[in-house]
Amino acid sequence: MSKQHPENDNKVKLEKLRYPIGKFQFGLIYSEDEINKFIEQIDKFPAKLKKLVTGMKKEQLETPYRENGWTIRQVIHHVADSHMNAYIRFRWALTENNPTIKPYYENFWAELEDAKHAPISISLALLTNLHKRWVMLLKSMTSSDFHKSLFHPDLQHYFKLTEMTAHYAWHGEHHYQHIQQLMKIKKW
Image (tube, rainbow, N blue to C red; front, side):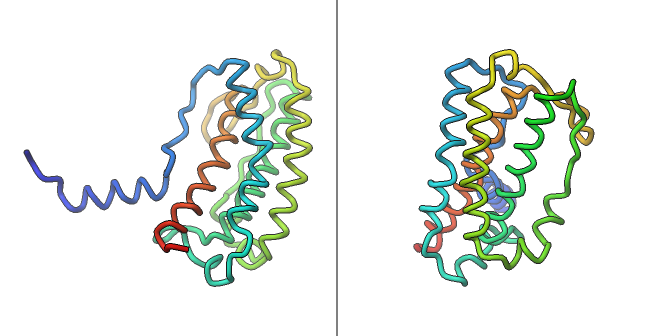
């Protein structure tokens, strides 16, 4: 039996810190039941996140979830930024024919003053209300609506709203696990 090189161990650990639930798998087909479960996850996410982070101290919020990673505060504000963009992208796809979305530089957004220093309560409240609207929209969509698509110019790919729904259910859990994983490591 051969031993793994320590550098490979570090890569595996970093990958686990970066993707605690694994990378999202693009290109899959989803059933109506799966889509409904994703909508339920999106619906419950803001309360789940709020419960996880309520009562955190300032120094905890300023702790990166991994070396060279975002702080918990930045992660929470990032999720709000990302989900606002997602909601708008859904609306474009529902009202336009295969619209080209506007990408944004999430790493630069995370370095803006509000993402680095604003109270997390602002983004938690935003997520609560944003997800109420988003879930209302998702529940109103027909099967054919979920097969509408949008074009991502950076990735040069069309994404159906079924896949976008799955992706954002994954995205919330992905960042939730970043925070939860750090809390376990730090024994908070």
